[in-house]
Every structure is written in C-alpha cells, then in structure tokens.
Length: 178
Image (cartoon, rainbow, N blue to C red; front, side, top):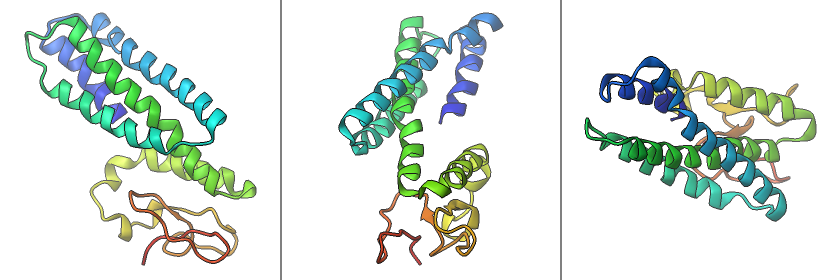
C-alpha cells in the first residue's frame, strides 16, 4: 500500500496537476509525516496500554478510505484535497506498519526474534510476487518462530502471516491451519 501511494502520487501530481518534478516529490511529505507521527504515537499508546488490536482494525480502514479518495481525484483536485488524502493514508499506514511487526515479535521467543523480524522484512520486500499465489501453498508465507533447528517453515512450523486467527496448540505454540 505504501509503495503504491509513493509511486502514484508523484505521477498524478506531475501528469494530471501539471506540477514540476521537484513539487511532485516534495508533495509526499504530508503522507510521510502522517505515517511517522502516527507510528510514534501508536507505539507509545501500545507501550502504555499493552493493547494493539484496535490499531490493526482502524489502520486498514483509514488506508482504504485514503485510497478511495485518491481514486476520486481528477484535474480539479486542489492541493488541500491531495494533502488530506495523503494524511489519511499516512495515518492508516502509521497505525499498521510497526504494529504488524510487533504482533509477530510478541509471538516469537526471545532467541527467535531475529528470524521472525527478518522474515517480515523479506515478505514485505517481495510482497508483489506473493500476492499472486495462494498463501497456503507458499512456504515463505510462514514465519518460523519456534525452534529453528527442528521446526521447518510451513504448516505446523511457525506463525502463519495472514488474516485468520491461528489455532493455539498445547503449550501456547501457534501453527498454520492445515
């Protein structure tokens, strides 16, 4: 979502609104600031309350609203409308990005934090290829957070990164649905 907005907005500003390249790149600042400030505030709230579910629920809704507003833009779009749309999208991104990482890290054992965080980064960088495949068939769509010497990535070997709730096995370990 973030990269889609980062590519779309400057092209829209240059191609549709007729601004120069410098203005089209600088126009991303409101979205970036919305994302950064919200991410910081969200982190502080999660630290204070210990709860993160609400942020994961509200974030995608705000991102969807922001992208819907982007889809409504045309040659008559004002700079204020563009900034509003970017701030809404940035706030949605800020609510989600670090929270998703935190969720996976909370489920990982201390010695597996590096593995879990590294897999999140790898999945994020290669998401465009993965979204075309069925996640159940993709062994890389699972982050291995159990004993990395004995557990294999795949069903039963780690935390499933997806939309569904994971079943909890005896002992508190979670695994992908079969």
